Length: 195
Image 1 (cartoon, rainbow, N blue to C red):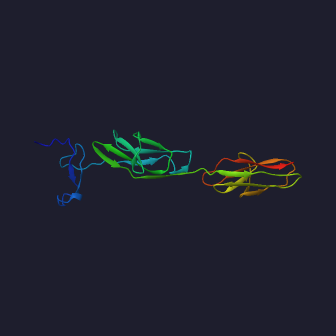
Image 2: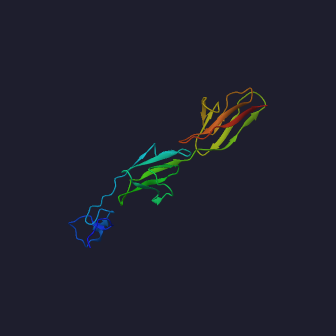
Image 3: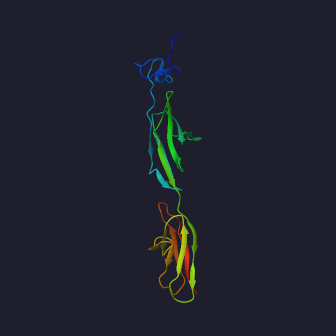
């Protein structure tokens, strides 16, 4: 019976090494045997942005491979269920790569390390009050540093730190504190109360 070249075989990596050396053999491709070379498909991955980003954002990875290729995206060396398109949108940290199969041969892309950073949060705030005109001490705690502002959005940064001593107040005034860091959180109101 003659080989028809439509099956899978084992192929030798180096014809000058002994055929008895088991490490010199590799799985052949469908249609590439017998005696044909192992023609793994070329594959690379392009990211749509930075691989380190804040929680709530996302990153798209695009597999670059030959037309008609079959894709399987992987995270931490495990297949991702139903992730079989040329583009994969991700939201979680991990090590990503794609397995591409074409003409019976498969290849893995290089890995892409993705780091998703948490949003910094305010843990607690403390307003303060006094009976007459003057300054009050406002405070807050967070998962990172703290910045104080005069407005809920935009405005002027007034102070950095956990305890903010206000200017002299003659009426109740609201200030806003924000957890600073790589991924800043929402601003929280803290009141300087004049009774």
